[in-house]
Amino acid sequence: MTAAGAPDPRTMARLAEILAFDTVSRSSNLACIDWARAHCEAHGAVTRLDFNEDRTKANMLATFGEGPGGIVLSGHVDVVPVDGQPWTVDPFALTVKDGRAYGRGACDMKGFDAVVMGHVPDYAAAARAAGRPIHVAFTYDEERGCLGIPKLIEAMHGWGIRPDGAVIGEPTMMRLVSSHKGGRIWRCRVTGKAAHSSLTHQAVNAIEYAAAIIARIQQISDRERTQGLRVEGFDVPFTTISTNLFSGGNGSNIVPALAEFLFDYRFVPGFDPETIMADLKGLAAELEGRMKAVAPETGIAFELVNKVPALDAKPTDEIYAMSLALLPDKTVEKVAYGTEASFFQDYGVPSIVCGPGSIEQAHKADEFVALDQLAACDRFIGDLLGTMGRRKV
Image (cartoon, rainbow, N blue to C red; front, side):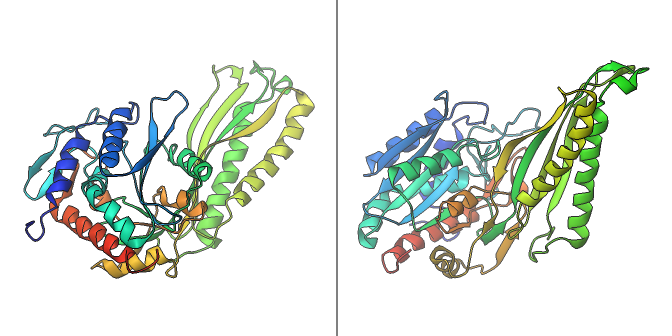
């Protein structure tokens, strides 16, 4: 029998196994996925894989039971690097001491993954009792901007699988997170015309035109901070935007022909992110008219680098109501960081975020998850399986 506050031994065994896989985002995750797939198949799952372009990484969907709907328990298996961090334990091995489990990803989010894998032997029977399936989803490249989950969602659509609800186990201290901001990262490239700095009338200064767009970005930031849509519950309750990386020019006496910068914005639920780009593209069109009057080959181009939808779960969503009823801590939170939950939501799958550990421990040296948090997640997953049989998800 498991002691009160102690994790399920199956969870701890799976945690030791999954931490041993070096799934830093620059590396392949296939060994880890093969391990997860074999474990799920051994307990009756039908598994499906979706690969990245060079087939060095895969998403996995394991399905226990038959029929439409059901729930999906979802986590990413990639982790951030350990390079340059002062670890005092082996980051790719489980170390347990002082009520904590240490290792890269123990908190973000292999702790949750281990709980999900620990309960794999229970899913087939729970799915039969509920009359609907239980899915396990593991994804790649979440830490690189949620690059794997859109591919999995597309694959699920092709497979004809649309669960009724999703639990994404990012570390929330086992509190329900109902909302998070969405995000966009854009690259802007400005192509001007070079000339000696004594002949500026013959040139189109790419840096100066880029600066005009950056100035507009700052104006938008100021506007949203002072006048923009407010959503209470967020630590920063308005949409933010900033320019974060810039390059341009190649000499102190040369009018620059090229400039490039990256900017991102994090928007609250209910904010239309397209309004920002409509503003910036409108300004770019005006600037291009002046640029092309000097040199027709000049121009301004925007490239979408990454996008994460906003999450806005509703108390009326079955997965929300059922999960909150099972959690001892009834706190419902809104967070600024993005998760894969919003991709499921955009697919029409009501989703919440709830998992063991504190986000404060993520990505740090000697990353850990408290054992009592793993135990709380064990209880939550066990209760969720039992509730499925009594209530439609």
